[in-house]
Image (cartoon, rainbow over all chains, first blue to last red; front, side, top):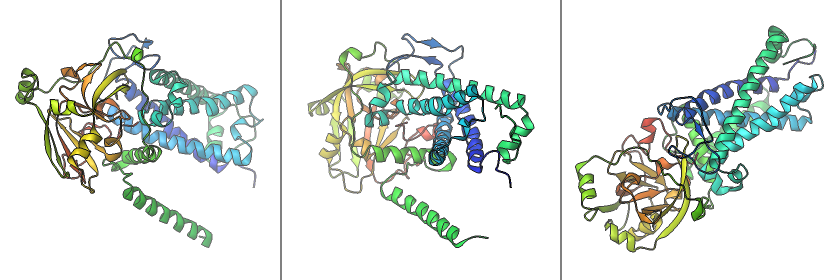
Length: 194
Length: 246
């Protein structure tokens, strides 16, 4: 039997992450609308200066369930991401960085997996008053609790941009065959541009 | 075909889940709002943070120069006649009752609390909504008052009843933490009414909504089941977590 296009572990972690990421973006938006304003440093609030304001109304309601869903999905995303990283580490090979991809594509995957995703997790943890009591440097490296919140927003926005680009490239390079490759593992060895 | 190896492995996995659940209960790692799908996340977060804070690290403290210029508040002071009377009397007849699983239930006047050893701390408070400020708080350690009334060995949670409906509770880790204060001063002045006069809780390692304002009564309990919705605070009713170490 031919080697699968993507291993079972890559396929499983890819789709688990897809659902977790979708839940994180929806719930992150629900949290954001409670206070669509950003600051730099340790503190910031209404009545003081902001870094920038999003053109959104302040809506208090959805942040309760938003936060519960955000943390539930974050646990899944982190554990799933660790499983992916551990298997790549063990195999001494990260499938997303394989030479069959274009250099620019590999660079984007590298940034997404090893920079943007860890930064969203670390800035998320840096907003925890309990965890920063344990490890104060966690928030200090980002320049304060509000800076961590702002970086969290930018890193998440960059991940959404990546998602749009990724889906566009899947469509361009052959939606059916790319989806078949990531769902069943079957698929041609043609250059994968997604 | 199910191999013997797989059967042994799944048996071990099942046993470790049951074992982990028993250990988590034994060491109070399960929050009162653990039910449902989101309860999985709440429990993982609470248990992980409790294991990481076993050594009771202090929340960050700041310089006086870092104190914020604005101190936003959410919500209005209680509208009840009783609270309004206390405000008009400048809290002269206000009392704090401490009861429940304690050897000597007691009622404190504000001046009683001010005579106890005080602690001042300049700490960061983040609101669940996203904004934050740094302020100086002065008060008596909650642990000092709890030791004074003599908590019984079966005590597991401390419940805080304010003059409004925003009751809440803490586990013993946060209740006995050295930065957990019953605060009567903010930035060197009497606690302003919108910030919880005459006495509010300060919990440095959780979001702002856990720092209950307008305190009236503190009750030590061994279980949160019989109180209100049984979920440890009014927050889960409104969609928010009981534990807000985030």
